[in-house]
Image 1 (cartoon, one colour):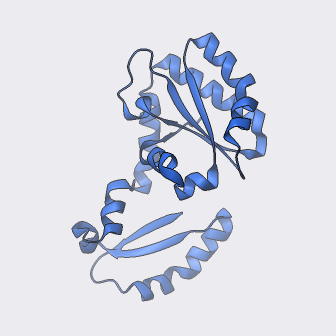
Image 2 (tube, rainbow, N blue to C red):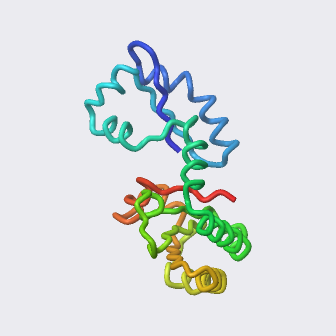
Length: 184
């Protein structure tokens, strides 16, 4: 996980990284993941003269806003679709157990431009290497009954959680731009 640390005044990145390194190391161990903190001044962030800062300004979601963003975006789904997506998430959690890392809504419903009859695009995140064809077949006992009973075209694409985090490939990179985590 990468965090941008916005600071007032001039920033000495080497000094700021040294100052935050102990705290960053403790958080990384507690979360069992790698956390990196990138110090930047408010002024440099506002100017966004580098490709990195332009990208961060375009794609980053402030940590405090993420919870309300996700909640309000999921709540904008029609109730029937929201109910089916939450049932699907529960079924996939049960099917995959500890391998389940999350379910993300993407596509027209995530962008807010779905039409009547639009399919519901979902990215199934799993731990470890993922054989998409194998996992599509494995998830059919959960996906197909819900799809048939609801009349919705549920399009579930399995992917490796690690590959998603790295944005491997054009597809996963694009999905990372606007995917909404499903939270039961």
